[in-house]
Length: 124
Image (tube, rainbow, N blue to C red; front, top):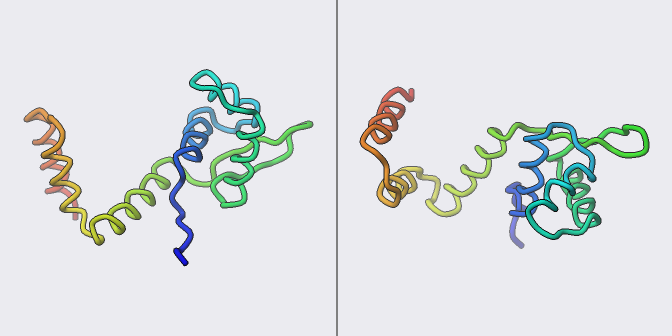
């Protein structure tokens, strides 16, 4: 049996992006933002937010007749976890093949490449 992954599913990440952007949000708040992009059921958003709360990605507190949900980790912390898991799973823990792929696959300006090289040099 495969170990449960802490990585967010695409649907969970979509919800987390809304909550990171808005701050503490109700299900209705998130639903209305997502509805602007695509058709989605209110109950689906409610279920997904409850799942995120059970998984520890969201915390909630009562606010009148509804709940306010807020992230338990910053976007940067969550992205870091997702990238580390991806590098471990796809590249056996080595980030070098990922960096090479990104440099070769994307069209970067010489200035962007120089800035990236400088950041790598400065890394302890």
